[in-house]
Length: 281
Image (cartoon, rainbow, N blue to C red; front, top):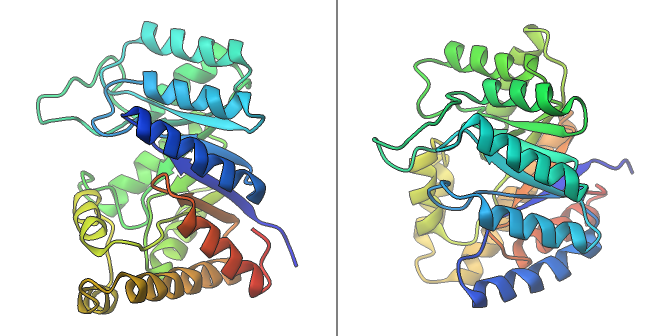
């Protein structure tokens, strides 16, 4: 039984209650021994303080933290200060993103694309940081074409990325096709599959429409049919996502990055299910 890459994502909580809930979630997930825990910028993404707080807590609790850094609303100087701060704290892993514009008039800052950010981090800190970038098997929602999206991805990798984490998806063919295309471009870094557990149909549908992740029609219809029967919905969701993970591993995916939404249960259930079918995540 081979071991695969396995990491988990959190977002920064906004209230004291949410902070306490996340602390409890972390305590439950640490025994699963993921390689690292990434911390997003939260909604809007304009402030990185909450990200740093959570990353530092994870680091102090003896786990590997991978804070997100983004181009949005930042300058070379603010990014320099932030990465030097992370370096001084002993954090050695970053997820470098362009980030989502908070609104159509949002400030991009001095960096417009993730490849510029990766290049800058490398120039400032050499190989201190292990850098992940984002990948979009079903195309970035703002890309003009799949080809343009592929070119952008390759540019980020050549700027110095160590690995990529995909947007979540439910169609394994999209992932395999994407990996095949980047390999043709000479890119050989690991492309880790982003996995979103299914626990709530309404929020998943809304979020998927925003970020360009497709929920296949048969899954949508089935999820809609459960209505308020959350137990059945979650059982079905667990079956669907377990099967997706099995297909990905069988097809050679190097591992998974679980989007936890700050909940322990769905990730625990998925890992438990995968272990019972013989995969060690």
